[in-house]
View 1 (cartoon, rainbow over the protein chains, first blue to last red):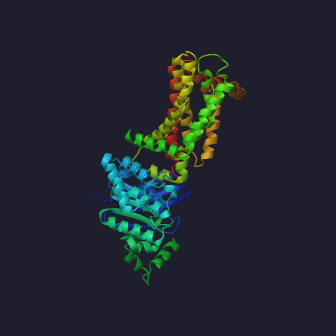
View 2: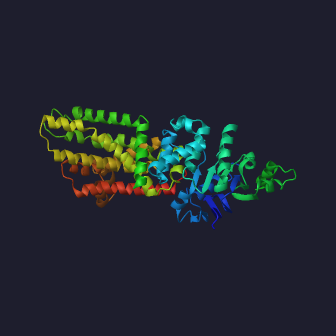
View 3: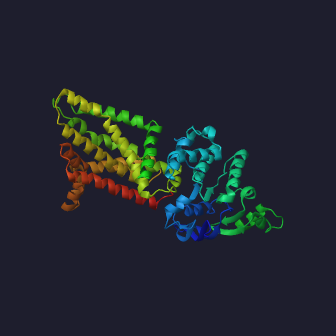
Length: 241
Length: 244
């Protein structure tokens, strides 16, 4: 069987700058892969290429066996994507927004509404479901973005900084949700918060200056330092890169 | 088609989610009325037709239509929703068409709300309603051409004000392309063929010929091809510069 995500030699150049440099990895259903790295390391750009928003300068990415350049629509159907900052149309309500997404995802009639209600329930946004998105707090906005990403129950979820800027309680809600879905999906999250890796990830990749500098389970990464401290490993591998 | 329809509905209702729709319709109707009665001499002319009403449309559209088109793509860029929108399972053609049709649908709605003029003129006299109908078609086509150009320009920037200003300027040049203002500028240095080619791009002659009551195939093709070419360019621009 194909891995859920297979990335080979993925490279992105913006002019003379190489932002992502020959990134290669694959990930399977059941894995929660954490992209870890300093700001500007190329985590978001890698994600944008996997979901088909940016086209790679070199290399390839496959999602559920579909090539992102050859079958972009099939890739987009298989993926749920939360862009950085969870953008959503501010003048819509979460319900209106999710109904639009549900329709575009190909659901009709009662199923369209069922999917919306289910996503609202899973992300616990019932109480704000009728308010314009622009009036929502950061935590709720993020959860509306999550609801949009998992509405069609995709095999692959790509979440760019899903807990950034949330308070501890809100973080917990999002992490629980990720753990809940972990066994049936392949999930990639990006973060620069190290505790996140311990909290939800089954595997972590440290990315620095566009390159993968470490890859393994959180405990494997920790064993690379004498003290077993993830932060120390992070500093060691990212400062030299 | 389904996706185009869904995008159309979202974009069309987006106009009504803010005061934009109401402001636009009220100002459009007020200005249309003022121009028709005071500058067009609608009553003094003593003729049962809507010429003084339609002849101001190119100028009204010049600064009202860019206000509709400026948000189409610039706002998506500004809000970052373009990343969400373009990672949904929709094709670029569906995305561009859905948005354009929503803006066009809205401007046609505003145009249709001018029906009291048509009732008035029918009450006062016996106008040639065929001519009125043709004029409405011509006006809608011209609005579509302005909108397609505006949508293309909106795709270039995340600043809506810039999109507005450049669209107005571009449409101004295209509207007047057949007139001496623009032609003199070109005839100073360009060959006669080029001057004539530029002249043929003028919106006004095409609009005026439809306004006379003849829906000439060539005029329809003219506005139709402006719309299609601008929308293709729109798609290419978005595809080329998605992120910034």
